[in-house]
Amino acid sequence: MENLPAEPALRDTREITKALNSLDILGFDISLDVATGNIVIDRVPLGDQDWTPEDWDLNSEKWSELEGEITDFNPGFRLMDRPKWLRSPTALLSEKKTKSSIMVAVQAKDWVKDQLTRNRPYLALFGERCSFRKYIRNDASTHCERCLQFGHHAAHCRLQARCKFCHETHHTKDHHCDVLYCTAGKGKPSSHTVRKCTSCEETSHFTGDRHCPTRTRARSPAIEPPRETTPPPAE
Ligand SMILES: [Zn+2]
Ligand SMILES: [Zn+2]
Ligand SMILES: [Zn+2]
Ligand SMILES: [Zn+2]
Image 1 (tube, helix red, strand yellow):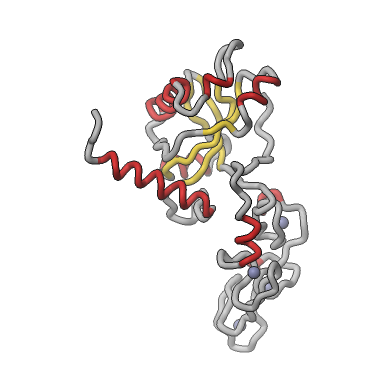
Image 2: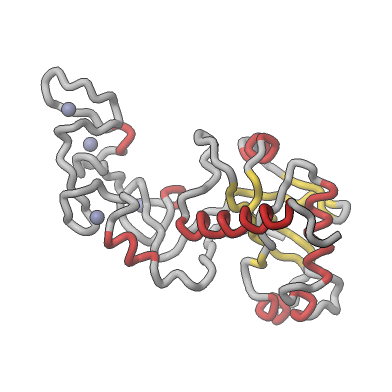
């Protein structure tokens, strides 16, 4: 079954996905028609009581079995990459865990998007229901769209909202321009909105822009897999 014509294309897709994910420009923003997104599946079995961290080495049977289980019993899921445990199997073993959470990039088919709008999305895994959720990146380089600061995602923000267009204390989506006869709609900038970034002080872009040098610098040490701080549901 080697050298199928589709294989190189599949490899490319995975590389492209990996590259896109490393830029962090894709998420499960269901208002956008995005191709892939990262999800977290909770309470995935690590194995019986006697499992070892080696069971989860990169190309282990365990991974193939788990991937097979996800895709065979959940036709809406198309994995774009190998899943990974959110915490190292060694640490999980030291806490005698037999279940934990994995993160995986999946194709954002309608089924997945639809599930994510529900209260408790779940999938079938080893004959049980496992809940899943959108992965929310939450590390030092995460830029918050609500308060315009680094270090957390807007979903976890407890700080005062700040507008990226005028820097006043309101949500960016509520921004409105005071210039007479201005045609810019609510929450939108116009050609006369002064571009000034609160992160780097430059006047070429708004705060949070992908081309912001401060934002780029915050991201560059992210060789380590992103840490997730949303607590999983109680086991
Ligand atoms: Zn914030
Ligand atoms: Zn404003
Ligand atoms: Zn205006
Ligand atoms: Zn900037």
